Structure formats: C-alpha cells, structure tokens
Image (cartoon, rainbow, N blue to C red):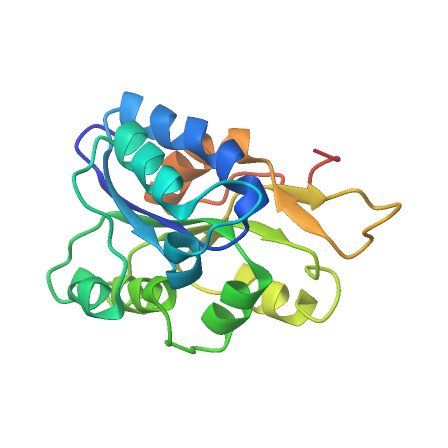
Length: 194
C-alpha cells in the first residue's frame, strides 16, 4: 500500500463511523495516502452519534489529510486526473449502494465512484444497510457481479431483530483493500455475524 492514493468515502451510516476510523488509521499506517470524501449528509448532519464537525476533525486527523472532498464539483476531477488507485466506500448505505448499482450520480460519493470507475480502477464497498437482504438485495447482487467492484466481507447484522440488515466486517477492510488493488475479491465474502 505504500504510496497508493486511496479515496475513502463515508456515507451517512453514522453508527458505523466509529468502526471505520481505526481502519482509516490502519491504511495510513500501511503507507497509503488517503483522500477523505464525505457524502453531503455525512458531512453536514449532526446526530446522536456526534456532530458533523467532530467527525470531520477526526477523519482529517487519522487520515493525515488536509481537506475533505464534500461537493460533486470537488469529486468530478477524480476521473479525468486519475487521482486514485483505489476508492473505498465505507460505510456504504443502502441508498448509495442502490445509486451505484443503477448508475445514479447525484451525490459526492456517487460522482466519486463514477469518476473513478471510468479509469477501470477498483472500488471497494463496505456495506452498512438495514435492507441489504430486502429491497436492496437486487442491487447487492448486481454489484457483486460488476467489474472493478469489490466488497469488504459482510454478515447479517442482528438477524433475529433485523433480518434484512447487512454490515461489513470493518476490521477486514485493509486486507480487502490490498486484494482489491490486485484485482481480487477477499474471500469468503459472506461471513458469520459481526
């Protein structure tokens, strides 16, 4: 990972931010140069999990970056300038998953994905959604079979009470990133409960 430029896009699964921060730190420790990206909601909305400004500060600190890409205009050059070797979307909400699967480009993160994929470079998705095995299952299936799309292995999240919910094993993110950089899917994709 030394000197690999990795975009790290966070979408609004706020409850997962704390699980993602150590993985950003680990990627940086492995020598990656991180470019943080935040969806509009991730960057602007204060929740019970913390204020947006606090999360931005923490992301900048652990990524050792100086700025966060927060607008579609800022994300668009990722493609033409070939800025990234890998783009990670973690956490990836069901909303963003569905948009990526259906080529909808109406947000910072979906623009980053579209711009990056035009260069035939890998995108790594760490899903975090309550409807991964519900209405979003078709989108998950489509992306599992898409070129240059890879997944952090995932599992059902609390199947007794949320049977459609899926969440990535965030601790596997750095290894999944190394595999994706080599054009490989870290296996097995489906794992036991988190």
